[in-house]
Length: 157
Image (cartoon, rainbow, N blue to C red; front, side, top):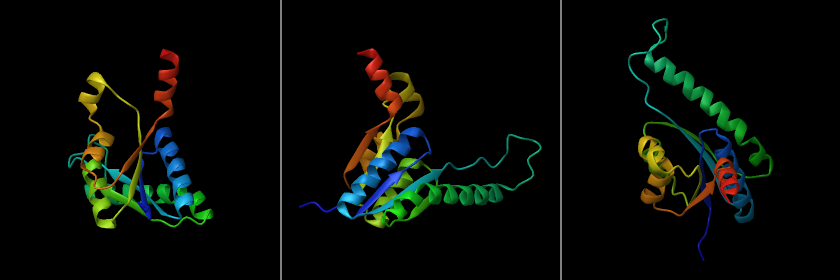
């Protein structure tokens, strides 16, 4: 039987990723699994776009890292209250690549991630982190369709 002991839920703090976290929390409860949450910060440009900007790039990265770690800890507070153990990860770089790297390093058994089902030019223009993770991850990936996509599908029907 396939055992789920470690779950990873990537988040961008969108409504869809909060829904994925809720689903991941339910699964973690049922399996008695650890639930970790990850957010990947993009690499910041070395030259700020705001001429009044006074921080160095590494200072901005440090401030963003601290803020994201705090937000992730707040997001997981409810899960920890239910007795679900886990960690928070804040990484820098390409979101899909960093998530896949953490999956390998932490020996994650299941990824629970949101998607918004972009198609056509939007998918080509913006890429799909979820699609890349599905292709590259060494473990199963549960894709939770975002509520915005469900509403559009219901309206089209």
